[in-house]
Amino acid sequence: MENWTWIYLLFFLIPLARILPRILRRSRLKSMNHVDNSTNYRPGFSNNYTEQPQQYVSTNDPTASQKKPESKEMMVLGAINNGAKTFDKIRKETQIEYNELNDILENLEKKELMRVERKSGLFGTKVELYATDKGFREYHS
Image (cartoon, rainbow, N blue to C red; front, side):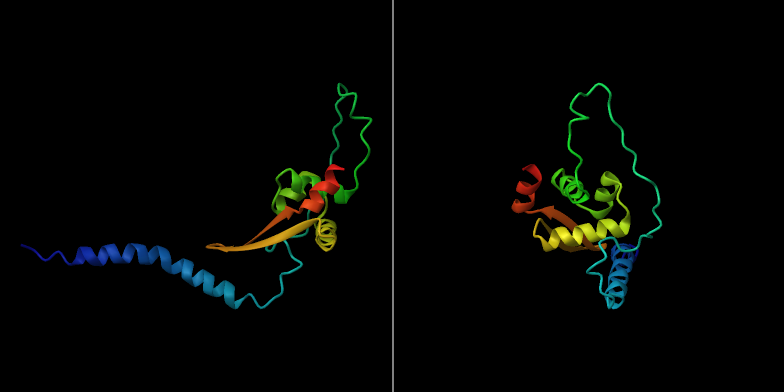
């Protein structure tokens, strides 16, 4: 019989090779976390978004011309109420520029119309935005 103890080494090294980079990445993120990210809802992305919003109006819908124009805060609150939880999804849905959307989200948070939840996971912190009951009533009134 041959010596098969090397197989135990193999079963130990494969999971270690997968777990070790995650542990190192997490420790690097913790050491670089000295910068305050409380006002930055979308870290790691540039602010060079210049595409203009496009408005499409259907000619077959008679109520399209009767709808009152929404303020940008109500557009953002509507996007949150419709299920957009992240900064990026809200920005795509409303077509509002980065800095302006950041200011609107801060104002909505101060008015207690939405709440911010920060969740930590394997890939760093994740920021999710939720409408409060007050925000839900404000949007649907």
